Amino acid sequence: MIAPWAHNSDGVVLGRYGLVEDTFIWANDDSLKVYGDNLVVRRYVVWQAQNGAVFQFGWSPRRYVQNVRISDVDVIHTDWCTFKKSKCHLSTNNAVLDLGGREVTSFKVNDIVISNIRIESSCPRLVYFKMDPASTGSVTNMHFNNWFVESQTAHEILHNEIQGAFNASLSDWTFTNLKIAGECISSPCQADFRLGHHTENINFRCDEIQSLSLVLSFNPVVWVVIMTLTVRPI
Image 1 (cartoon, rainbow, N blue to C red):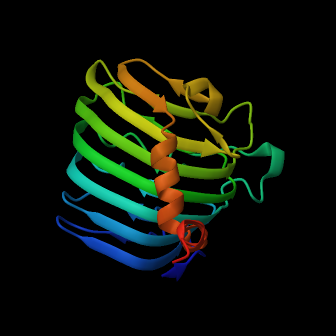
Image 2 (image 1 turned 30 degrees about the vertical axis):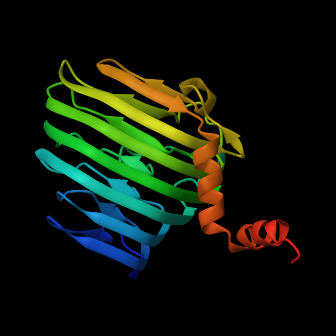
């Protein structure tokens, strides 16, 4: 899909058991709305224009979703600040992982795994997931594995933010092998994450074995070298 000219040109929204694969999206609104249970997305290329999120969880009164698997996504552009330069101001729906607006006030989100995400060039904001104070429910068991970000520009007013509500907790989020400019992130402050109230067990960890496994699985040249080194003469 190529439709970046209007600010309501969304990408994909699917119901339960939806499948998206081998797809290119150039959108000027949310590229993928994560709204359906048992959603599978793989081999997905995104050019995110000046508006919208790559993975959107917001924009409706209720968000009940579980058992989602998203993998092998290449984000080749995030243009939120491209034409604003140093005066960049982002709306609440501009992030790779996002909870847009404040319409969602009832949550039941569980078992979301988003893996092998590659983000090219500079990305102003990875995560903006802030609940409305009146929200209820929970968002739990969120796993983000092997995210590789070429660079993240520092801004005084732009930060990665995660925040729950008094009656709606955000808990058990794990970022494993989140790498920015080649550096693996092991604490929130390393990547300018602000963890607000009513969050619990938000972890950042570096798992070099898993990272090596990913490199091997995606780089056939490495396998050729390994095979060459292990060949023994008869």
